[in-house]
Image (cartoon, rainbow, N blue to C red; front, side, top):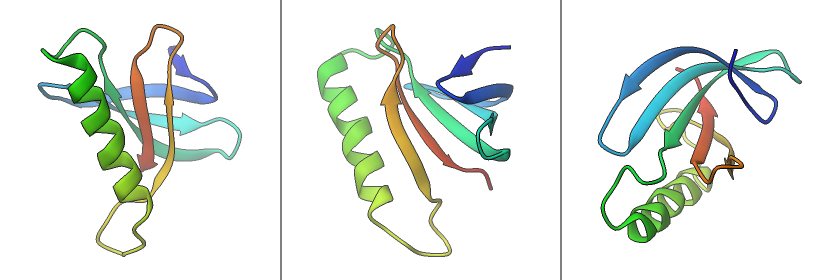
Amino acid sequence: SKQFAHYRIDAPLGRGGMGEVFRATDTRLGRPVAIKVMRSGSVAGDDVATRRFLREARAASALNHPNIVTVHQIDATDTGDQYIVQELI
């Protein structure tokens, strides 16, 4: 099965204009997570879209509230796809 770093992709959860969301497993901690992947080349103005994607991830990671998902990690694949690892709700 496909992996992002130490996260094993288990199933697709959804797809949008900027990318896809997957249910995954953190293989180090054994916990379920959601991975939001922004596909490189999928959006016109990729640099702007990437900056917005990362800005939103950083803003969400600074918040601690029961109604906001926890951001565990932001990273990029070897092919340049940006991704956010979040709490699975």
